[in-house]
Image (cartoon, rainbow, N blue to C red; front, top):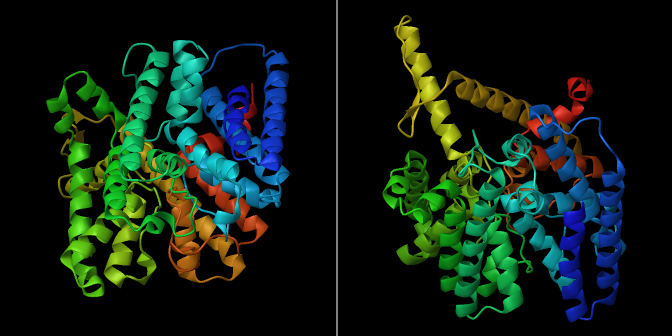
Length: 467
């Protein structure tokens, strides 16, 4: 909460620069409220300071809920988004890097509000608690359980012996890539404010824009290519960048997950370009739009240059499949993650072989290593929770009486932290028409999807709160 109070000062300064007095006061009040809450929590002394898996999951789940509750205050206090449920939905969408929005006219908002809205992407991309670990020194096991609960992917571990140093390395890579992207966008003639907004959205793979037309507003092939490439870069496992930093680039380039990730992108870009070529009448333009949308969807960023909801059925269906797959583990992207998809496919293959040869002993291998049964079981449990949550959410969302396509893709986009779906929630649509209950339900899906379900679901289990 204290970290968030400090972060709220940054958009307050932006409000001061642009002479937005109401928004400036809203950010100051929100910062004071967050600081007061953080100070009050410091006064509460627990009986013990040990953080095990259960405590780690609970801390992460509660922290993200609290961050979203206090993070939405500037929207409400400034009256830019006066409805609390709408403001909460928008803030959760920001921190979880989803990019789904209830706003129908983005460009009327104050610049400081737009800045905070997109800045939540950048903060949430690598993980709020990972950022906090850089500032707040914790014991090795305590920080390990927090990182494990917040980091996306089948497994998380240390890059270096101390977890705090691991967090510093991750954010160092994150900041470096963000600065490089900022330089490229400025070099392309984009203004500083627009460049920062797009850096936040690209780095966090979030997708909020300060224009209703998203990236299509700039109508620039240079911008499309630069942002498209960096979306893919931010969807790569950050451990590989660390290996490159250690001059072990050959090891990084041998990554099995990286090969699958790039292979899926190449296949999708080429086949969709062929499928939409009749629309644009040019191979060059077809490849341009196909590349950008594939990069945006598989990395779960959600930027748009075209309304892909109008594309042929093959392209639309393939993009929905990419929404499920998502980016690499250990990246800022969402979705199932490429590594988890590989493990699940190989587990199915092993299961089919065992049905034929019941006594055969075969291990699942990935990245040159044998995968422990515990990791495989965790992936299967994750998939079961994922499917069950998705089905229940679609059924509850159907109470709005919207189309099946809208309901299903709305849940997929929120659970996988993508942003746009199809139908009413397509690239040119939004979530404004959903009921307050549905917005809270989808906010739950966004938080659960970003934290990979357990940190949020365990908050509803009685065993979590037993001594």
